[in-house]
Structures are given as structure tokens and as C-alpha cells.
Image (cartoon, rainbow, N blue to C red):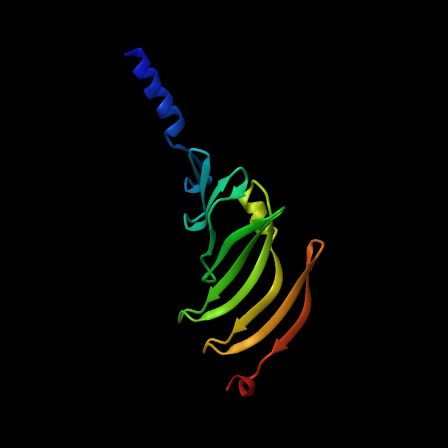
Length: 163
């Protein structure tokens, strides 16, 4: 009987989820971290309790797609890949009509702290901006040099080019 009890206790110890909650001074959650085996599931909230970030990590490495949400500007960032010391993602914002407003590629420095990751974003590749009617307004190309995004080229479209 002790043998079965020991096995059961060992099973619960390593298979049960562990949860950690960190709160703002106003009592609303800032982080809810859940360890499911060796996977860390992170939910990050703003001071109003609105969800900002959802991500899964194993050994400081993305396991799945990470989503970052913007409450005021109706945007989200989809971080879906990593290479060496960086995470890569796409910024997508929309107008209230549901049409795309801007699509940009972003690079982030890897870190254990989510706020540091988000603060390290740099533009690279092509950024596309649309008019509220869905027409192309601007295309800008960026290159990362060191810790800066450098604008390489930009093309601004007017209504006659979009017809």
C-alpha cells in the first residue's frame, strides 16, 4: 500500500500544474504564470485587467505562437518564431471597420522578462500601411543595424496610384 501511495504522490508532484499570480497594487492580476510540466504558460495583463500577452515557453524558448494585444489601438503582435538571441513576429493593426491599418515585421531580444521582450522591438523588412478604405497608403522597408531600425526606402501612394 505504501508503494502505491508513494507512486501516487510522485505522480501528483510532477504532473500537477503549479500556478503563480502577481498582482498590481490595485488588486488586479499583472501576471498569471502556470507551469504545466516543463511548459510555462504566461498571461500578462494591464492595470485595468485587460489581457496584453499570452505565451508558452520551455527553457526560455517559445513553444507556441505568442500573442500580444493592444487595447487602445486595436492591434496585436503575433510572435511565431525564434532564432539565436531573437524572437520574430508580425504587428497587425485594424481600423474599427475591421480593415487592416498597418502590418509590420518585428524582431525582439530574447529575455525571461516579458516587458523587456516587448520593449526591445525593432522594425525590419517591409511595413505596409493602408487607408481606412483598404487602399495601400505606404510601403516602407527597414533594416536592423545593431540595436536600431534604419529606414531603407519608402513609397507613398496617392489615390491615383491606388485606382
